[in-house]
Image (spheres, rainbow, N blue to C red):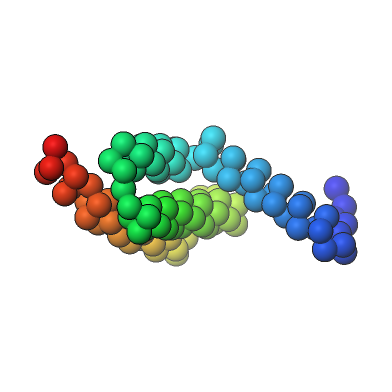
Length: 126
């Protein structure tokens, strides 16, 4: 398969969007960690509607969900590239994968903190 660059602005952007959507779909349908994160995002979206969260809370929640899913996607890409380059166990590859997983941990921890700040007061007022 030969790669042919699309030099026109609009068709190139539409193709890029198509590739991005296809990549997001692959993440959601093939990676278990992304399935869990995406499911959590959908649950929090439903909770946001149920509890009528404010516009600021929506912005923070959407930012947190996007951050976690984005970093999870990058972590998956790092793992796939590392496995492609060196399929067997290698200490340096393991170190790289651990660092990528640590980035997901930081993002998920921030998202959990944001969720607690938003929803704990709402549960206390039930």
